[in-house]
Image 1: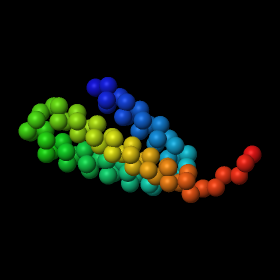
Image 2: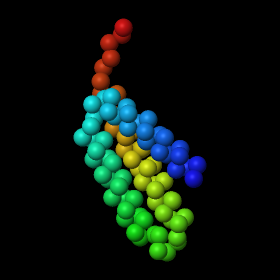
Image 3: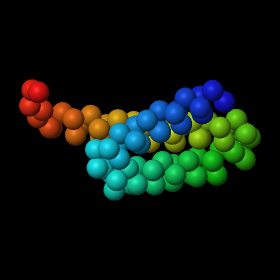
Image 4: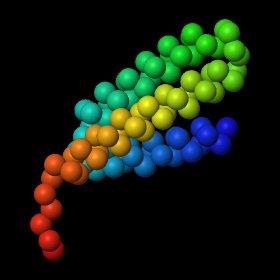
Length: 85
């Protein structure tokens, strides 16, 4: 359960950064991908392994979304040039 709280908190922080960077469409696409992965993993593994598989599917899908967010934000920050203040 702690893993769910951790990855969801990370998703909230990175999601806010995506919104601040004006990446609304990219954020929506990444959430859609994470949702599809979560549904597929849940439908596939819950009948075989039970509630543990459902929790694992949720954590894996959040981690996927977090990695996609991070990759997008890292790419945006690397491409932009910041002038010294």
